[in-house]
Image (cartoon, rainbow, N blue to C red; front, side, top):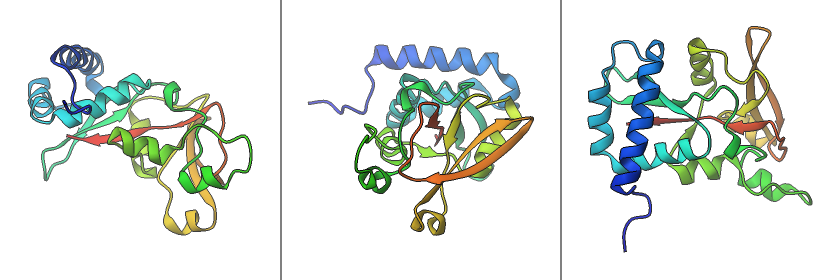
Length: 187
């Protein structure tokens, strides 16, 4: 029995081609980073490659947006123009989902991200992403929420309107057809 979180060689090859093409088309997102180095890291980390596959499968269009100066890890984020379609209509977390008495969504952002092996963007990461383009002009994305806000029942989301990043709050149990979450992955 094989590990279900490892791609077949054909799937890995196809994903690497997709990621390479996106990397080469968007050099402004990762100046100074060489694709051969990124590819070597991905080939050495098949579980991370699987996570990128999940990001791609759910519509995130992941791309390299930086590199950690201390660890050398490359940082991928969802770079689709609008929130990933395959992750929309979800509430923030399991507690939010379970608090709904009716009209429950199928899933929640935190559990989905965990299952994919990624993390929701922080507010800082969301703001950093906007330096590479204009994201979420029509949609919004759940972002990591501080514990003190979450303990009071709230959760944060962000979008980009009128040339600015706006960070808002909602009840963690809320969900909307135009709200998903964006993820980050370090490889």
